[in-house]
Image 1 (cartoon, helix red, strand yellow):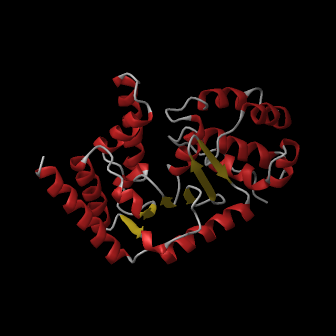
Image 2: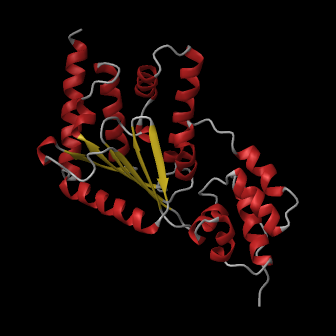
Image 3: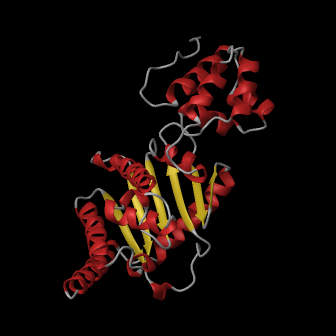
Length: 280
């Protein structure tokens, strides 16, 4: 019978503790479910820690050091990994997004962060923090643009966005900024890098009136769902909850315009903004 897997080297900040966790768990002959019991978490959560899709908390690290006789390894690494350039409510979702195989997102008010060009992102952050010094806004914009670097890969991850029609009509940053932002989405879609649909106003009431939704799947870990609203965000890994949110997204897709009609509408709105900008 083969022995436990040894950790694989990787540049990912959570890959080493995740691989070490798997190595030590298998060395103790424990299943993911068995290791999860004393931590009061599911076996799926242990799998997500091992794959680097979830962030380890300090109390969990302390318990793992104790159970696996790791001599403080997990606590030390947990402290280093707690530093994040993202807001606390979104940090874990952003880090999971970076290793996702598929990302499906419904955006009710704003262009999704992954698809925002610089000027649009800056206008969003400035509206949220009107009195912040410029350096704070610069850092936030830089972090958002860094997230978007995952779109440089021509195929992975698969990104599918459903935009509420309100996203197109909400004039963030003025006509010129909106023109650039919508044309950026069109360019990504026409290069076959993303799939985008628009949920029109005439679709009426729909399954996600409460806020935004992001679904993420991974090559070697269970899927996650992230839901957000004003001032809050929550990452879900419970299979039944994720399945319910997946149904919500399926319903949104079913009520959205086709890709062809969606791109035509986005292009029409972008042209309207461009003409408006020329008048001023």
